[in-house]
Structures are given as C-alpha cells and as structure tokens.
Length: 169
Image (cartoon, rainbow, N blue to C red; front, side, top):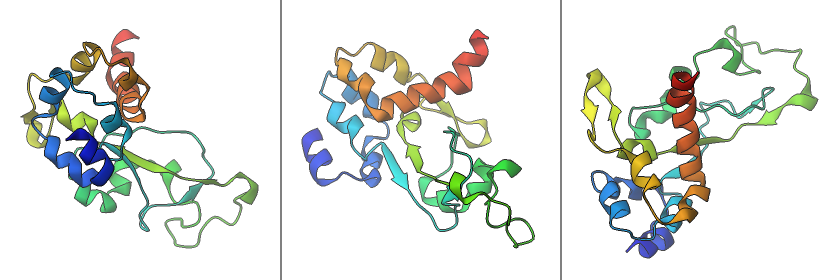
C-alpha cells in the first residue's frame, strides 16, 4: 500500500489518509522511508501572494497550525517581521530602489506535515493527538534510513529550534 501511495498518489492531499493512524503504521514496523522521502509529508509551494525573491538567504522554520488549504493568505501571519517584507513592494507600494540586484536570492517555501501527526496544541488551546510522541516513535524504529529523509530532518530541526534548545540553554 505504501509503495502505491508513493508511486501514484505522491501529493500532500494523500497525507490526510494518515491522520489518526500514522503512528500505528510506524509502530507496526512497516518500511516508511519511501513515504517520508515523498511529497506526501513535505512539499514545496509557490504562491503569487508570497514574495519570490529576497536579499536574505538564510533558512527559517516557522510554525503554522491552520489548514494547509488556507496557507495562501497567511504570509504576514507566518512572517510578520518587517525584515520579511517584499523587497520590491514596501508599505507605500513604491518598492526599494536601493536593492543590490547581485544579492537577490530565490525563495523556496516548503511545508512539513509531520508535526500534525503527533501531539500538539491546536486552536483554542485544544490538545490534538494527545499521547502520541512522534519523536519517541521514530527513535524506537529499527529503520535507520528514516533519519536521513528531508521530512524527518526538518521535523527534528524544528522541534530542536522551537522547544529543546530553549530548554537546554
């Protein structure tokens, strides 16, 4: 079944099939590396409403807990700081004429859906997937290849940045 999904349904829409049962599949010992390497849990997107270039070439990981289907209109919610404003379109609509064109980088936006399968606090402080600790589930897996997948590396980086690093510091 997993091979079929990766081959024929390699799209984030397929991820909805795993809501509520992804942790069961991982615990059963099924091979999930191809699934984690697919576009089912981590995909790139490009919206006209979001800036496509910027002078900042750093990578940023941000939380987003609303529907993926509503993501298009939430650039300012996810990146509210002035440093993330469109470099060619300031608040007056004129744009910055002093942008050095040799230091403009293409922005790649990606979303990782793995966090929605573990425990998190949703809207109105409601507990979602209580008792499901994906990091522990992955750590107990004997399939070591999963730790080299972009989905899981991005997920663990985000967990470290948002939670663990603050605790350990």
